[in-house]
Amino acid sequence: MSEDKNSSQNNQPEIEPSQPKQKNEDEVTTKAKTTKQELENEPVVKNQQEQQLGSDERAVKSSTDAEDYVLSVVQSLDQRRIDVDRLEIKVDGETVFGMRDGNIAQSKTAINDKQAELLKQALNDPASMKGSVRITQGKKVLLHVENGRVITDAVGITKESAKVDIKSPESVNEGLYKRHSEGVKDLGLAGSQKIALSALKDGVERGQVVEMMKNYDPEYKKLANQNGSEIAERTVVSQAEVELMMQSQKLQSQQQSQSQEATASKSRGKSR
Image (cartoon, rainbow, N blue to C red; front, side, top):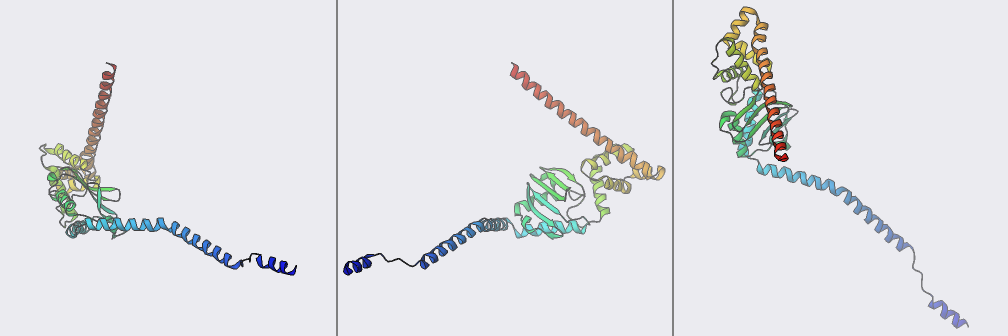
């Protein structure tokens, strides 16, 4: 009987201690936490890698000579007392230079030789340029040249008025006057009004137009001497603004008429 009892005790399975199992569970839990943390950090790391790749790609596209040229353009604008803080240059819609808080924005500054050549043409020979160049200072457009046409040149930095040379504000106004008086054949104040109108159309600010006319237009000077500067400003610059508004309204009316005519034509075509 005692032998059976001893045999039964010997056949019972041994119970493994619970401590090793607890240790394994802790290892699994720690590993799971580490994996979760890695997964959470992965998007941040990936984003940093993508940003670095984007920066590297821009650096590869950029040319040292082209960067030197665009910097010389910006420096010349600064030396002409044109505010270059928040300045941005776009070529064919792509930002090739940017300034933020008085420093060059490295993430926005990368220019290749082809883009530099377009910028050079926009400043020196815009009529031959095929493409688009925009120079802005904050929300203000300083220069906009597109496919050979100077749409805006608010501070006179293209064509004869300024070929990226260091110029005083007086010489800038003189260049503006020469450019906008070209081809004006009207005599007297009618000619002065057309010169002012041309500058306003080109995006030159009103105050600069007044300074330009006051310093370089003979008829404007004559009227100002005889009747005062306020009368001269109203007679020439204000009248030019009225003419510009009337031309703009006329153009809008023509565009609306053309649009309505096109819509009516489509309707007639469908009814048939």
